[in-house]
Amino acid sequence: MVAIIKTGNSIHRIFNYNENKVRVGVAECIGAGNYPIDSDKMSLSMKLNRFLKQIELNENVKRNSVHISLNFHPSESHLSKENLLEIAETYIEKIGFGKQPYLVYQHNDAGHPHIHIVSIKVRPDGSRIDMNNIGRNQSEHARKAIEKEFGLVNAEAQKKQEQYRLNPVSAAKVMYGKSQTKMAIQNVLEAVLNQYRYTSIPELNAVLKQYNVMAERGSENSRVYRHNGLLYRILDAEGNLVGVPIKASLFYNNSTLKSLEGRFRENEAKRIPHKTRIKNAIDMFLTGKKATLQDLIKALEKQGIHVALRQNDTGLIYGITYVDHQTKCVFNGSVLGKQYSAKAIQERCQQKAVPEQKLPPHSAQEPTGFQPQSNAFEAETKAHPKVLQIAATFKEIENILDTLMQTEQTSNYLPYQLKRKRKKRRRRNLNNNQ
Image (cartoon, rainbow, N blue to C red; front, side, top):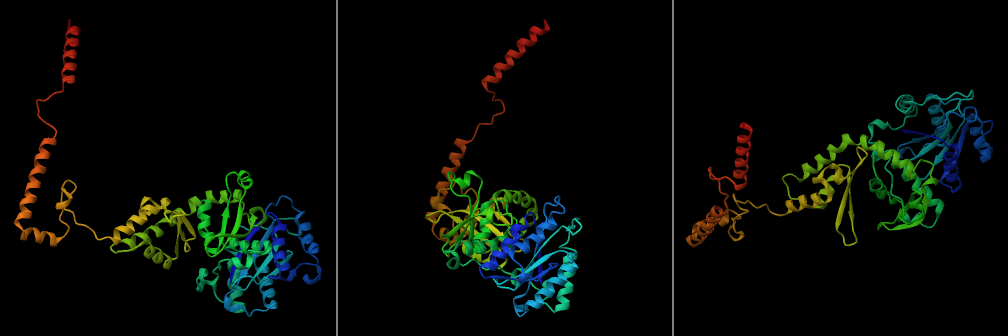
């Protein structure tokens, strides 16, 4: 089991996110805790007002809402609603939210079974629940205890990225409906925004495009761009924009441009220690072997590094971005160094594909027609005296040119200007001595 805890400053957004999924039939509210009646007998306003009234007890708590997802292994799809409710209740109790009102939703829109728990940080007496390091401490202890008690798959023994891999959005399913588009994009944003370290919209898109989603600001003359807005779109299999664009402000998980710019600054320092892994992977593969750009891309993919190429309409590659799914870091090629930029990588791959030429000393000054290319040429020159004679003639011409072009370095040579200055200095000294 994997637990993901998020906090927010709007209980409305988290509540509406889950209830909207219920409305379109991809989720179900399966239970509630510390409510006066069962969840199936409550209206939407009854569910929400229970949260709002308790939040009003302490208006100083800005990030007052809590959104938790408990994710299970795909093989655990047999878990019943009763099992899931019991797991949710046990988890909530162990992390210190046992007396808080909470709602439990079972979602059916992913490749693995999972539930969402919605709660608040304000206690019934108005005090605030401290959640510092709750994920590392209380949540980890709760996870391990629940895995043992309910016989669940141990998350530590599995590779998390393989267990809970996010599937790309199917454009055919969402391109005709706004609500479905929003849900599909929301799922991708949940998995990407908080986990990956990116420092620009293009770097973020290098990750999102792998799931057929893209963030765009629009043209510079558009209203969205002028007001620092951001839109999210669905892409089809060919990378074309389809479906209905959704404003970033309509998503609950802080996906607006203003929020992302704050993440850009934070991620700049966080990703620095992880540069070396990508650089080493590239250098080790390109050293001592012939390789094309596609060979490099395939080799990096095996190590969990995705290479996103930026091309113009004619197919010319003008940019490259590396997405390391292991460290969750994204780097534009030039950030790693000049030799990892799009141009340098293409040149390095091209050099490996072309046989190396062994050039003799002073080859830059020798006529191109007489540069030895291999041992076979040297053997040929030994077998043909005329070739040796011509080569010697060119060598003689080269020596004459060197002599003519060489700068004079005689010890008694002195420029006229210096001589003139020295004479003036003697006269000045004589005048001073008088």
